[in-house]
Image (cartoon, rainbow over all chains, first blue to last red; front, side):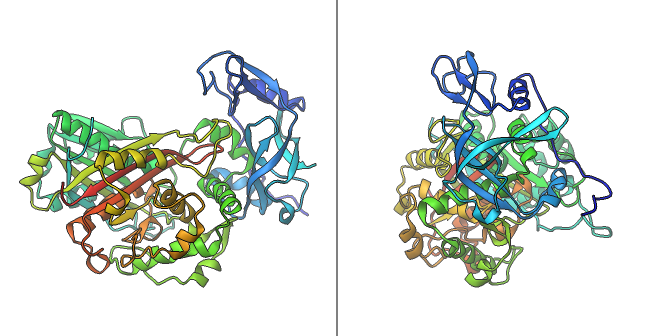
Length: 142
Length: 397
């Protein structure tokens, strides 16, 4: 299939000092999240301090990358100019994946026909290179 | 501090909504024009003059398409008013109901005795304006192609169907009821009757959310004026009293990294509103529930305690029309009357005022004395609404 004349870019994360460790680990194929050194709660999305107890002793911790589909949707229409770059992917699945360790992550289900995706489906992380140095954690059936 | 009886709504104004401005040759109106128009309508309704607001209060709600850090001041400047207190609505679609409480608290404290709450948006006419997103959305949703609230409410709805067994028949009943009320409302935008079959065959936008689950974006402006009970007595329309109010933001049912997305902050703010009002569910004659999506209306009915969680049978047996035991969305809701960005949240407040004054015309709930309205704003990562507010309004105290 011919490439579109002009590739419309997809939005990329803006990497901040708070989120940098996450993206650095993703580039090495590791899924990490913050865990509170005091109350042991998982903290996701990345934060400057624990959103449960307020402690600033957050520790980046590796997860297994295994989880289950908690909820999902099939995207069938683009909404908003910023997301036009996804038009060529439609239909595709975005999902909330509940990771084995507890946190819920929002991502895509890949490597699976959309009609096979279901709530409770066991998935594992796979990293996709989205741009120079940026790897997005996505999930495929396991 | 209880706000019961602290203030009353004395005037409302709503411009017609439209969807013009995005195509060449279509008429275009700016946010400022809708704002000014809504203000004028509210003043006429209340029997007040612009000058009455000098040294009083003005609140303006931030909108997605027209945001800058001092929007309430720009609004005052557009209108030519010099407020003693400027309030900002920063809770998205919840702002209109949130500001009922904020304004009533200012009035009860004696700082001012009159506040106008204003909202306007022209997303079709001012579509070129850039908007900023919360960092979680920008960094951890948009790169995965999450299409804003459509997708996020689809996550919630997919889980809701999984846990409750609700189907498109349940959602369709709500959509058909709201449209029925819109057919009785000359100010509604979508007024053609909708059948359950038409609802169920409407196209999928983001499974399981269909076209007729979604709110209708529009241009428009809305305003209400709230006053001390003493001031309200001297004005031309019967006052609509604030009886109960609550607000709950960034609610999390469970750990913040893994919350129950089927429980909203309406559980807390609704309970607070009932307690403040000293009212029970049976006292409420109608509900105006923030309706950016149909399934969210049902989650709120559950969270307000009109039924249990996942109570399919309740939704099957209850008549939600104006003739039924629990009328909802009496004017058709935002889904049929349009959502001019965060201005949409004003709709249910204004409709409640009309009902409680007996101005509902063909859609009037007979003998309506107490109504409950909600507002919702922002959809947080992995959860549901970031901002929630509820208010109970009454024709008497």
